[in-house]
Length: 162
Image (cartoon, rainbow, N blue to C red; front, side, top):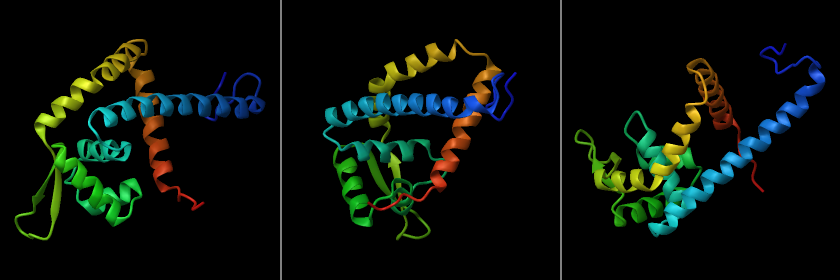
């Protein structure tokens, strides 16, 4: 039986095949998510990067500043400013000055805009919920742990310049 190393009854010879299958499925998932994100961006007159910025703000456990957004998205300061300007004009984000230090700006998702996004992405959430029902809690814990670890590793990878 296979262990945590990805080995199966055939042994380590199947590891490259398993890695390829995993890579194919991750690319397919990325493609489907990209398609949905592009649809939302187009419908809101935004750039797909703007939607990524919204996700950073939405998923954050601490206040997000433009500097945090720059690091998370790998953008220049100017590109972040343009992105935040577009999101603010479109009514998705607002800039809030930190009360103790007026130079610090936090980015907040506008509640009404969150409702629009929730409505658009509702079918995606429903699809995920349907698929989730096919897996046990233990299996979902493994998938979640895998994705979390993979995201952590990918975040540490330096993007080469072309």
